[in-house]
Image 1 (tube, helix red, strand yellow):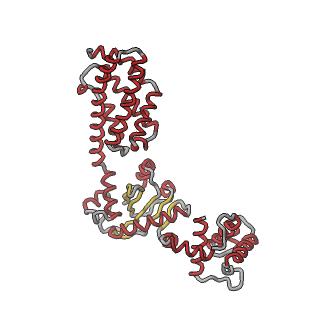
Image 2 (cartoon, helix red, strand yellow):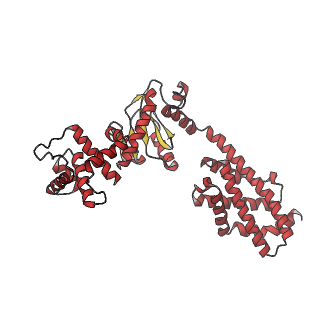
Image 3 (cartoon, helix red, strand yellow):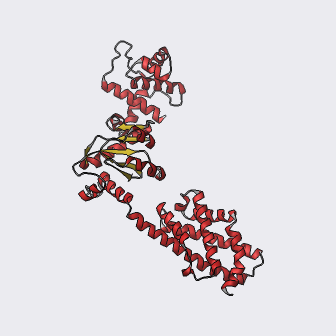
Length: 386
């Protein structure tokens, strides 16, 4: 069968497949099942990819030229897109080949239903396979080219430098590396760690954080960096939760980074937002590092309470708010939108159940700092675990 004859056999069938949304959906499903990396991408992006490849394959097939003479610009562009999205070439090919297998199965079924002889259908599909293989080569070529370009981008170099400085992967950065991003070997910088982990949001916020003696990038899958000045409040709000350390020499950056990450976890558990100094979170961070001791303290002081009892939870929440507001009844009542007498009643009831010391409003109600710390820790742990 000549090439025009093959095109005549499969042309209408392929045009029908390329415009059938159900076919595209089945190819997408096959690709997502066989490639977890492809499955992580939005469904709409998968559909765009499959539809573009189907259209490119049909156009190439109908031009009746040898595969190496065809224009595979669309396939190369799609390969480059996947590289930029972090899909490996192996993951890309697994998805493409699964989709290709599915469309061949559908083409066979529909070709037979249309009365196309098996021999003619098989010969035409074999020829189509050559075109599909050439498209795959173009995809891989586009992916590899994009990978090489991405490896040379400023962002990649910035991330590598930050990993060296914050994770101590290879000692301090070389002076020329530091200068390339506006850092000085003898400078003092705030280590800043954010709660942002989504690549799309990191990309949007990262550009706002950089500049003016600041270098930010992705470290341990979160937005982090070094800055000569603390980020302004509006940027911290955009990032959700931000923890910053005092400005220190670059040699201390790995230690400060670890402290900031630990403080970020503590702040996140407390539901905090915006910018917070790691020093201000010192208590929560230190206590969070001792979960076994926290459980012992909570169990010993509050063992008489039932975490499933809503009234008990109200008592503990009121007592914790009382300690957080300087053991002031009026401030506690205002924070909880309660009458001071209600606060007083709840504290007295908690004393009866647990043996909690007297409040400031009662004789002997001045707590030593260690005692305050123990009860604050016990109350916070009890609420968190309940």
